[in-house]
Length: 393
Ligand code: ADP
Ligand code: MG
Image 1 (cartoon, rainbow, N blue to C red):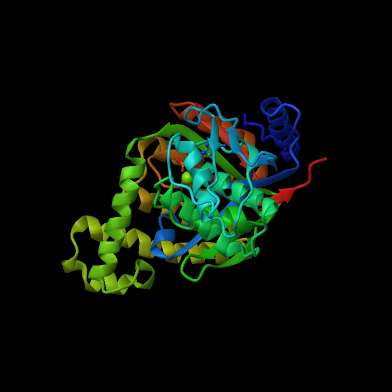
Image 2 (cartoon, protein in one colour):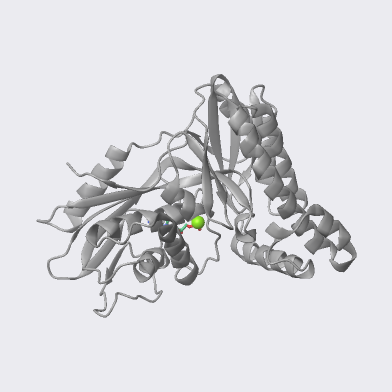
């Protein structure tokens, strides 16, 4: 069975109750939320300035809170998976609320957002965070936390409202404070995602085109392998370096500017590994644009085929898949009515995404469950809205 997705109202109520429990005699006055995301296609292309095609999820992070009377700043997370302690007390320096990273690790995402927030000064505040995005599962709980927090701060002290600058500030927060050198995709779609649409993002120009994805006969199934191999973060940095090296050997600013012809023309200058990395990225950027066109036309079969090609390329050329993800994809592809399936996110564990006919969803889940050796969890999702302020009743 698919996991139930808590409603926004439920999350807000949970956060508000925790707030009242933590800060007796106080009630939250403002609230904001931001979604996690799933990437349909375009993997490891964002930091190569290519295209990605993610959608925002109905899984969200919610922040509720109030300005604090004494000027202190306290943040509480409800997540039992966050490293302890779950409550942090920060003092915001008067001159501009710049904050350095410190322990616990989870609070660095918040510190980073405060540091990169685009208006000053910030008042002290109290805030509680709850989330339905699984932490560390490849659905970008980190970006949803950053963007939800930024959106919360916008109500305490408005900035100029520039959404792209907001996504970039949240990405910076992850770079400088969580020390994760991520691309722009996660924060971008968490800010700018729209209901009923995937978003084709050009990660070079930062322009985005919404692509309708609201056919009631279609379903997007996310399967969490519930494994995460320790290679994930170290290999991510290695891949980034290999791509930069390939671009430099090809005489390009980034692999976005390289064609397959450029690559083949310089093949003897690249070692085999660097060649395969570049080949994945160049082909994946092209596949992503083709996939968006297929989706626009309702050509789901073509879209599914491109998803499978993407998975195979991530497995064979980019070397970021793992047995569990390969098994989940193979199992999904055995079900009649499944158009395509692939690993999604950085790799080495996390989730797969599968596009299928709505009426075969139960059969697909059952089949995957029977075939997979671990304990998967399932989310049946639709493209949802990006970050927003919420009214508290
Ligand atoms: P993903 O973004 O795919 O979920 P990451 O490793 O990038 O995985 O980010 C997960 C980390 O983000 C967690 O380990 C935690 O530090 C932080 N995080 C995300 N959401 C929350 C939350 N609601 N409460 C506390 N920490 C969170
Ligand atoms: Mg993340």
